[in-house]
Length: 209
Image (cartoon, rainbow, N blue to C red):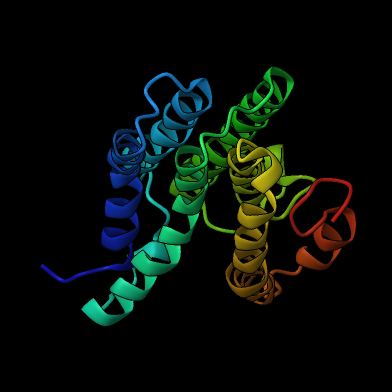
């Protein structure tokens, strides 16, 4: 079997629930509601990602990948696990309002991320061309917008230490997400209607950015 980027990404996402449980066990955080909320949200997200990959996979992650680069992917994604480590190692108890905000951002992010990917999958299975309606009408990357909400929501649970996951998310945004979005824009510019679509849409955040 030829290794692909998705094999490393999917395995990392699927390992998230176990990783959080290990953090909880190592620091005896079984009575910490913040740790349980983190397990429920990020753990569920990891499982949903694997399910999505098996049912309507993103072709971007189908590229062949060697062991070396695959381990780089794994190592990079592991930075996201700093948040559960912070929560457990420092016994962080986020205030209820912050937990509510985090859960709301997670729910909205899951909607944008998975619904937009499903819309893209179904649309491209029926026809080729530019997608510029539905969730893609005001954002050229609503799936990335969803991921931004999801990971920002996770990071909030670190409370006073949230600046660390914020730095990690910012690094991914600058080093990976934005270059990927710019690359996609250049690819889509081959469609005559792209210029008009670009004028009425934003790169990622609807109506803002």
